[in-house]
Length: 552
Ligand code: C2E
Ligand code: MG
Ligand code: MG
Image (tube, rainbow, N blue to C red; front, side, top):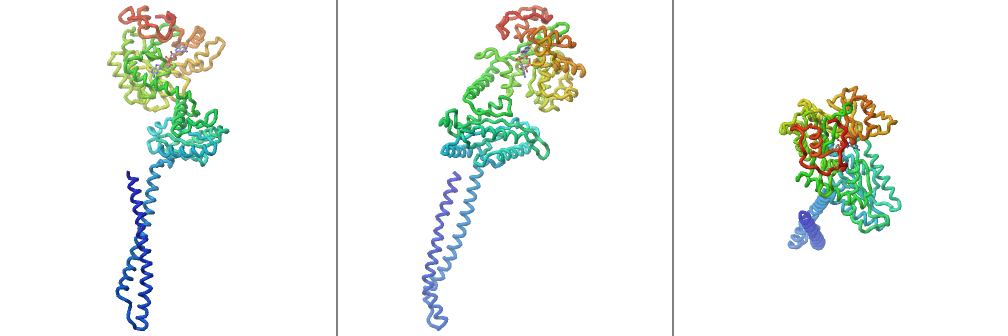
């Protein structure tokens, strides 16, 4: 609308060039009247003859006025047109350019890509469309503020721009997402790979901001209008290129970030599957499809059952019993992990209240949950609601929790410990916790990851890592639980290492609440004495009977 108005006014300004016409006509008239008035006037001055006709003199004066008016109006209009044209150029620039980084914006990128693609097609070249996304940019904004975040984006844009050939078009699509389109010879697609590797090198340089130095990584997805048979018209539109690059970038994120992928058609199916999972999780949470399973934890020396680790399961109507390794990361990503965990904990506290009071309950907590400053209070409130003793609860956090906001994590741990809850460091050895963190954070237990414990399978294997972790635990006076005890050889090796707790398939796979109740009822370890479980179900462990290695 505003654009039309501007055009209209510009048009009328152009038409006002008529004023120039008037001035020109006035000049011609001036020459004509002047040529008859001036000789008469000179004659009258020199020889005292009769002066020129008064009417003509008046006409001449009027002419002079018209010339001056016409000329001034023409100058004014010229200035106005120049001003309007530059205002219009500025408005167009603002509509097409991202003001922070000077790159194209999303809207203009579509047009620029289309043009680049058409000219590449005419030159028998291919086009690569690359989507670049900063990994964990939100953390930078959250931890260092938006102005540092902005500076990082500006530096990022600069580094990308410097790496690109001059015919490439670069855009900031929004937030921390950039894209570039670049023509290339389809016979040498690896040039694009080289270009992307250069980009990764650029991003690996620290971002030196005024107050902080930051490290960053990016994920990239690339799409092209060529497939293995050459140019493919189905792929040849800016819209399809953008969509494919987006899917490839998303795959790079899923595969662990800091990497790139060329788009492949199978990725679309994976994305669809992932969307279905998301919808399924939302729906399943609302109708109570997520349930706690329990894995026995045993004192290795005595063989006594000491407690259970709660492990989430999804009883999906479409997929059966789904592993937490599939749905927990998605629940974290879509912001449902707290609701999911709360629902599981509610069920677990109800289940565990029936168990013998000597049995502990361990619960896994996601790093996302530990970003909530009220986490400890909410958990303690839940314990009160279920009248569940804090001393029976152990929460398991992984090393990745320690990278987020260590101050907050420490204060949460302290609050919980003050109330008697114990804290274990889960999957120890797979992350990057420093000895300093182990010394200063008041953990109650280390859990050795099953990938290390598994090495003890071979009786001749000497697992230096397990040995080292056990010695570390002894040095720091931290009790240790070994995960993944799958057979007798592992158990024997661990027993030689000292007084440990353990869990693993040797003692049984994770079981439903009903199966646990049945197991405990048989061993007389239910609070209300032995009782029959409500019903027996077919569970993930299709073996008809559980091994009864743990002493009840
Ligand atoms: P985790 O806490 O390390 O749990 C132990 C995992 O090892 C469980 O896998 C368990 O079934 C498996 N496992 C136990 N013994 C053996 C064995 O002898 N051999 C082998 N190969 N595996 C064994 P699961 O249940 O699939 O859970 C995977 C991970 O998902 C858990 O690892 C935990 O990190 C996470 N998780 C499970 N439930 C929850 C939850 O409610 N909340 C959160 N945030 N994470 C959860
Ligand atoms: Mg665990
Ligand atoms: Mg673990």
